[in-house]
Image 1: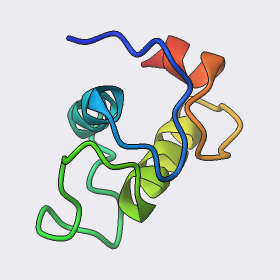
Image 2: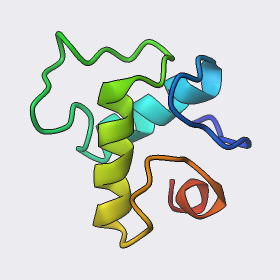
Image 3: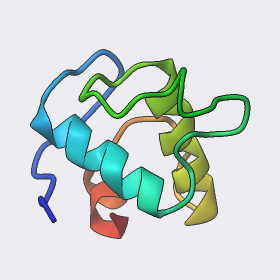
Image 4: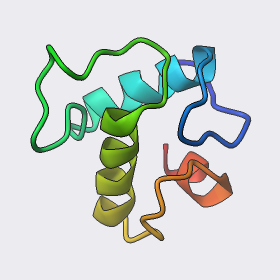
Length: 77
């Protein structure tokens, strides 16, 4: 599994976002409520679906649910 070494946020597009999406999927928060696999693709783009999944992940682990994948969120991943 790829280790995410940089902060990630809305509108980023790269391999770390794709790794993030894979991890969120294994955590059961991607796709998030209100989305399905057809409108929430694992494509390496940090869009509205991914930010909602990140916030669900952050809430699950009692982190600040700001949708930004910073040091604390990366540590939990």
